[in-house]
Length: 555
Ligand SMILES: *[C@@H]1O[C@H](CO)[C@@H](O)[C@H](O)[C@H]1NC(C)=O
Ligand SMILES: *[C@@H]1O[C@H](CO)[C@@H](O)[C@H](O)[C@H]1NC(C)=O
Ligand SMILES: *[C@@H]1O[C@H](CO)[C@@H](O)[C@H](O)[C@H]1NC(C)=O
Ligand SMILES: *[C@@H]1O[C@H](CO)[C@@H](O)[C@H](O)[C@H]1NC(C)=O
Ligand SMILES: *[C@@H]1O[C@H](CO)[C@@H](O)[C@H](O)[C@H]1NC(C)=O
Ligand SMILES: [Ca+2]
Image 1 (spheres, rainbow, N blue to C red):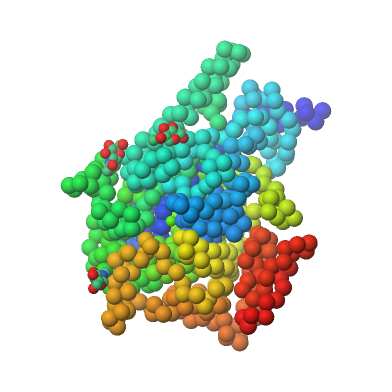
Image 2 (cartoon, rainbow, N blue to C red):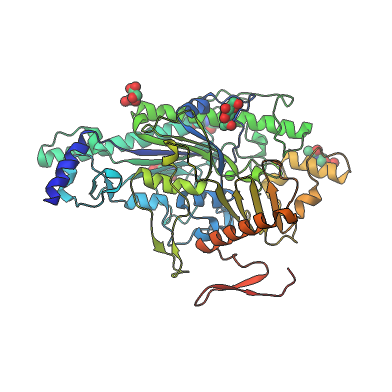
């Protein structure tokens, strides 16, 4: 009886069923230098067009301001201290996520739960769930996964993709910045996808004379396009300019990217973010960054055109964001607002009611994995990691899909966790941003804040060093000394002090705010199995009941 009812409901549902796919676009070190975020200088018509079909988040934050840790957090929903990717993955130091981590591509590849699509799938169904008023069919079909561009996470077994063109087997300039090549790789992904569906249909026809359309045989897909723009280039390929802005521009020795029309900006034109020194050198640096933004924007246009041409526009959730803050002082590698605030566009063809709106909700890149699982109706994973069998892993992020329908009333808090960037750059910070208040805990605040190689050689930072050394005006909002040596606790009122210049941690009138933020931060650290939860004045004794024991070290 139950089964009969189920089949009946399912039959109704099938009538309007369709595939659901995901296109996740992540830029590298990109910020708010776009029309979408009201920068009136830089031209980004393609991002603007995407924003018109998206909900635009103005309070989106990464949990960590470093490439691999952020990408691992995007793809697992777990902060770096929980998934194990403490620092940069590439090169000899090869930080990796723990072997037992269940990443998004792993979960999607193994997913055997999917909304019913065609009756031919019913031969192995089971009644599974009545979540969201839909009936679900279990059938043993996988979601096709693809990655094009910068991967920068490992090990391979934790982040498996069916289709992969990344720095692991290609030049990162080609798969991450050559937008013609990226366009062709996206086209190839869709073609491979359709060819596979065609083969499936042929097999079925041989067996059963089924008359489904090709589309009905298609698996859903998750395609991750990870641009290497707008990352700096001066440290690795200085011949192409500070931001690789000359790569492929058609000038002598630069090669050509046929689909890219470079846009050039004058240093006088750029909008200098308030946390960057306003000097001629920094302005020239930003003008180069803007040119690279034009390649990113045109690349996004090409990728979206491929999606449209392949007929997936109305079936595909598109998410655009970036992994960390822009590569300028106070930006990337910092958990200050300037290091963690990210652009974030979410475009759902099924939820058009808020297209073009701006949301003030506090959202985290830790929400991306829960959002994509929700879109595919796959339950959030529940498992234990070998190192901490008593601390079951559960996602602390939440799906963004409800926000696409209605502005959420309960999203005021995001958390941050940074441990390293390069292997030498140990500087653990934990943070919580709740409403107006932003609290940062610099665990080893007596050490100088470390500087990465890529930023170090940048014109802006070299200029800052020179000016400091020569006692010239830096035109920066803080001194290098202040930048290197921080207080243990930093508390900012970001509404009255968006640049985070006045530390209110010792303000007695805010002691209750400070205490409440410290407690929610601690709670999140325990919940996410943070090994740093007791530092620097206590030691974590993890045996039996984990707890913090005092060191009496004067902190
Ligand atoms: C850009 O400015 C407009 C007009 O002031 C405003 O409505 C919109 O929310 C801003 N967009 C973002 C993303 O801040
Ligand atoms: C990269 O890996 C993909 C498989 O994911 C393969 O098809 C492609 O040929 C490889 N490219 C190179 C240059 O080895
Ligand atoms: C970019 O890729 C296209 C297509 O593969 C190629 O023809 C072109 O030479 C590449 N450009 C550069 C600068 O490598
Ligand atoms: C997508 O949906 C819109 C609005 O419903 C429709 O106008 C358009 O033709 C659809 N595109 C495709 C490719 O189905
Ligand atoms: C900084 O000073 C050094 C040494 O005088 C000089 O070679 C370099 O060009 C300067 N860099 C910038 C960006 O001003
Ligand atoms: Ca990055």
